[in-house]
Image 1 (cartoon, rainbow, N blue to C red):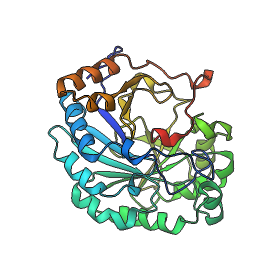
Image 2 (cartoon, helix red, strand yellow; image 1 turned 30 degrees about the vertical axis):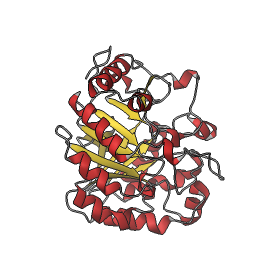
Image 3 (cartoon, rainbow, N blue to C red; image 1 turned 90 degrees about the vertical axis):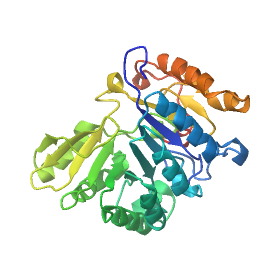
Image 4 (cartoon, one colour; image 1 turned 180 degrees about the horizontal axis):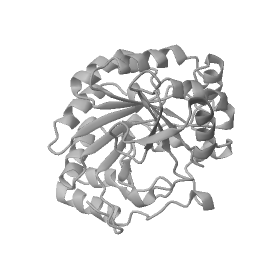
Length: 321
């Protein structure tokens, strides 16, 4: 499946819920945000049907996101059913890690290929400041469990800001003696994140190289997205950068997003896409869904314009990152 600029779209990110058990400062306010009614959330059966349609159009990689996907019950069942779809090669999960340790065995049995764990600090007090919850020990337990799982691709995602600058080196050091990939993801000017002091790739890299020495490019772990990987001398794992603002990768974008209430969003910044839920409620056949998806993908924006302002999302939990 290709858009009008001939980018191949083979990666679907699915938000299975807009709910979350943390309140990260760049995502939502301390008292949370109004959540979708349960009746408005796509059922697993509907998600599976849509994924069969997407697979028939060439999508082969699926990422399950939220909110926090592990707060939705029965996620291993969804993973198992998605892995059984002809053409789906990879099903991975992005999580804050709080519930990961207890659910990981069932997810692995279901065929989960990889997990991305979001973590911005190893300091308990700062963790509470960022997430407004005291859950760091549970996140670290989930990370250890993931690294102990044979064959599971494990990545750690950190959003670098001025507030967590002292955490960049300790987080990067986690990959020194393990197979972990620690990735630094530039903060997007989305919702509440627009008010924080973003630190870009060059700033992070300068701090890390002052401690670990020069970093050499490496193929890094397998993945679906635009991360560029590096390895300081003596490291077992790798350090990655996803820099949507300073190293724009729109020309290589291969993804679309399905929100929890069934909107196919073709660009993170814009409202371009198509509402698939009404079509489903009207009894649309698979061919009609394919046409709607192809029309939306054809009109996928060629480039974001975050640096120039424009409409921003209210909260990142709307789309799962």
